Length: 506
Image 1 (cartoon, rainbow, N blue to C red):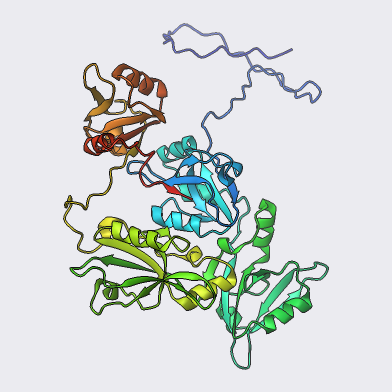
Image 2: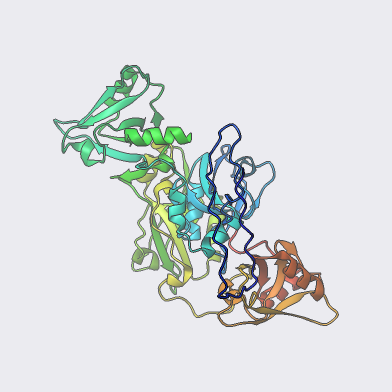
């Protein structure tokens, strides 16, 4: 006999009386019959309705000389690095990247808290293959609203505990001890080798640990090399060698996840050359250097810093004659036209940030087949962190107008702003923003022109239609807005409003 189901609980208020109640019916014995399954109406299994958050790994592969095919943006009022647009048929689209995705990691480096220009450089320097850990816009906004630790969320993507990143180690030979390293073939496994460094020898001091697996040496993968070929390569390496290694447990972890072990994932030890950042504020005589295009001995065409004036802003910032320019204001320029680089520097106004490296340093990374920007760790500071900034709104010095993407989460009092319009004319603007509201925290300002609602352009829509789109759009609400004066300047010049501020094509 089946046990009787309990009555459903309702919200009705019941009165208690002193009348004796019927004795409670004892529950009948329940026996599980594996043939019949569970048949107990009193047992209710309910799913947890709280949505979970799942990062995705997107692997992007590009051809030499091509981009990955997406625009990366960082907007005021919008947290995170946003994939603003994905080009059709691009490597980004093939890799599963979607418009609105927020990037958590670039090649296993957590970037949500990094400067936008630094993240762009990391993407541009990754080579022909790029690994992005991303969250959809919905998952990202939910995680932020719930106060989730995004770094822990990204780390949880790797299900195996104790998995460490590979290490790129620069070992200098020493007289009498050489590299201080033994390379031992793993029995029965062709092309796989373990390492045994001498205690306190050059290899161990460079970061090599006993039992490490050798993955890569001086830019060459060793999986296809015989032991004889590998020994010959080591003997010819000169007075130093750069190796990519990983501990055996982490190697298993990477293999299980189907991710290759490549230099882009590595932590570095003792690398001899690093790019550096120069922050220059223009003086009365300019910056005090010349930029020339020269052909190096390696045959590479480079943009070289020359004729640095004594006591100039360039010398004060630490510029040295013969350094090569890698990036301007966080944008990679090695392969750009010389005139274009000069133009970028001039358009920076009275402040510019240059990323440079010595010729010897560039030759070192060329030999390894990787970009010197791959391990660039010095973050590009925000513009307001420059010393002695010029007064705002100087004639001819204003930045071009840009829209802002504001993402709002509905609260008890709504979104916290009012819309305004000119009667009988299309177009709407932000009429009022409540103090402490979701609108204020998202970056809305009174007078901002509303350009898009949830990705739909509303410049030619009337007030009632914009209100309808906002009401039906739910939460979070995405508004692309623009300061009124800048908007009018663009319209008077008959220029289209850009998709968002700080978009970088990569």
